[in-house]
Length: 243
Image (cartoon, rainbow, N blue to C red; front, side, top):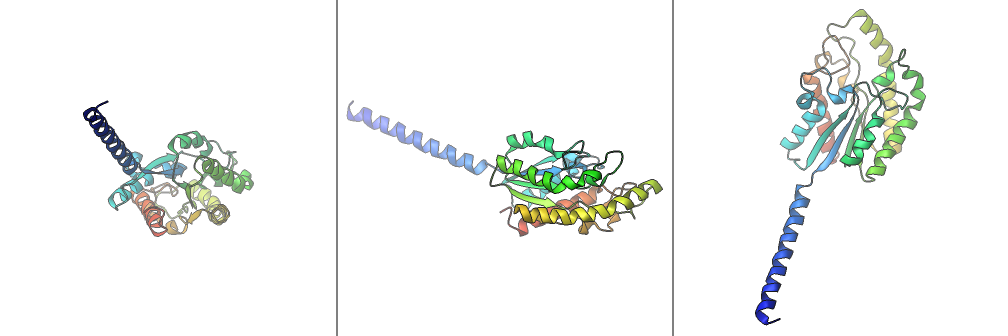
């Protein structure tokens, strides 16, 4: 091989290396950290017209993008009626296969509301499994990504003063509401045991009928979901979970 041919080969090789480095750097810069919002119908965005844009995970994504945290992608894994206890039907365990594909870097879990339901679903009668099933679910996600950060949220308070509640609904929520506050304590203990963050969503919604869907008292309205998303966003920024 003469010197001219060797020079051309070297230039092609260097050009190839430069292109490869550029591709790798571009790929690294474009990769977004994945945030999974897992939970029940409150995570899904029930009672609003367009959950795809008005649920708290959707609003959280907008807050991150607008707040200078464009390197994060939020996905909604909310399931209407879901529990973390395996006895419940449905439950959030069905999300595990999807999470294997998503591989979250941050997980926000909001459960507890459906655990307070008694007959005919009998979830509350199996509340003794709450801590065990919750911890096992966290382990299942840690098996997917050992470096995943967890934010465990307490369930939203039930607001009995919400406009339009029927007498039957008032009686139901009056029975279940103390269970919400008990699960708030349990969620805090689980977070401490699992080395996770704890975010209190119970107290901020206490008495906030203006944030609840009329005739419901459990699910937020559009303003309520915006408020919930802001609580999660501010917590992530304060704890430097997003940077």
